[in-house]
Image: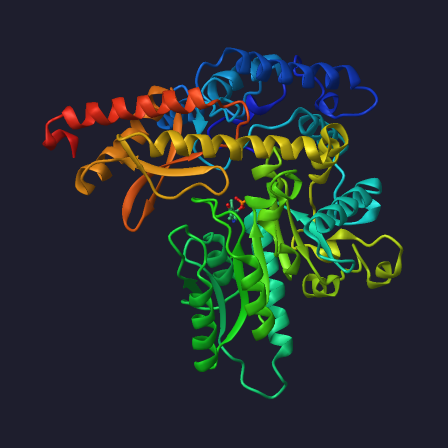
Length: 499
Ligand SMILES: *Cc1c(COP(=O)(O)O)cnc(C)c1O
């Protein structure tokens, strides 16, 4: 590709430029491979050793200007490129391993998974077909079976790794829609399809409905109780209403671990209602899936074994690097709804082979071997090791709740179920909203801590998402003091400036 910004003569490779083939990983470049990867790892290690906060407070716009000024047609040596990367990325990165990173559902990552990342990137298997992946396909299949076993989906379960909960939810709802369609007797007019999900369910359910062409209003929000769990009487009412309107409820989405509150919908009662009405039960356990390996809290997911499909995000609560997610179904035959046979890739005759091509079960074609990260994690730490880490953050959130509930400076929205806390400065609503927004920005800009914000009943609240087992209750107390300081500063400013 030529760029108009440079006259063609400047694009001629100079004599000093190494042969581009030397950058390919093969048996002639092993030294460059070893030292290149080691250099990259070393830069990360040095940064992690040096950071003293989760962020530096740098501005994204300023970094954007530096990045925009880089001439992509003038390559650097590997080491100079890493120096540059340190300046434009690593130095000001948001570090989730830092104990005062308390914002979103990002976990610190475990080392076995990082070792796996380097392995899977280098071998570059593609999980669409066995002839591009060999052992990788059977490893992924074993992990799907292991996850289904932990959930209790039964012997006919199957599934596939995906890029994240958004894709997992989309695939589950696509299958639910196809099932609903095939159940409509031939010759009858298609009925309007509805998805029932809690009012604090994840927005990816709405995105999926849109992608599936269900039309506006297809996702019906079901009211929650004070603990942000779906109310089963409200679900029963919505099921009756849909039936009375001649609509088909193609799926009920129960959330096991809502993004804001960590609340777990009452799965057994929801499963009863789905069984009684024939609705597909999808459980979005993107966040709550960590309980599958908890030695003390597995019971909180009771009822999940009755799901027709389940979303799990290993990159939320299994301490895995992004991306690592899976969608599972109770009845593997339902995966036929995403199967397409292409003669050049996965001809139908392959389906008779003992090991199935994973592309037959996936919305993606070329696909990373993300499963390897979970594999090496389980083979190194064991499931109990991962569960212990997740239990630790749930314990810490419970302790932090005690701290907050006893602190007159703050009010808390709900008692935590998992590891999030939604709280705000305890003052009159008009001021508390402005204080909340100010505090979050000011903390980020200071680099001392990162917290999230959300709205509850139209008002702004702060949110801690605790996913770091190294965060201590002292860290939490310190951040609360910082929040109180920023709130006081904001309140001390004249109202005209403060607004
Ligand atoms: C994060 C989340 C999702 C979306 O998952 P991604 O991996 O971010 O695509 C879906 N549902 C819930 C409850 C989540 O917390």
